Amino acid sequence: DPYVIKNLGIKDQEKPTLNLIGDSEIDLIQNTSYVELGATATDNIDGDISDKIIIIENINNSVLGTYFVSYSVSDSSGNKKTDTRKVNVIE
Image 1 (cartoon, rainbow, N blue to C red):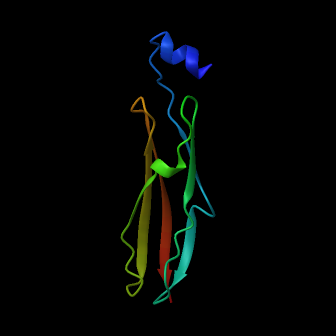
Image 2 (image 1 turned 45 degrees about the vertical axis):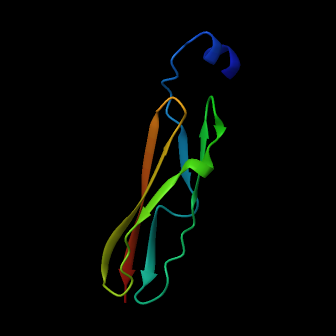
C-alpha cells in the first residue's frame, strides 16, 4: 500500500517502469521527418508518471547514420529509469 509505505517512512527503492511506444529500433528514410512515438512510465508508489518523462533527441535526418533517442524518468523518491530508441537514417 503506497500510503502505508510513505507514512511508515520506508524508503522506496523500486525504479519506475519505462515502456517505449513502438519499436526500440526504427529506420528513417533520409530527409523525412522523425516522428516521436513517446513512452509511458509507471511507478509502484506514484502511479502513472508518463508526464515526467524527459526525451532527448538529436537526429540529423539529412545525414545517414545511427542516432539514439534517450528517455529518462524519476519517481518522487528519486529512483530513475532510462531507455533508448535507436534510429537509423537510411537511403
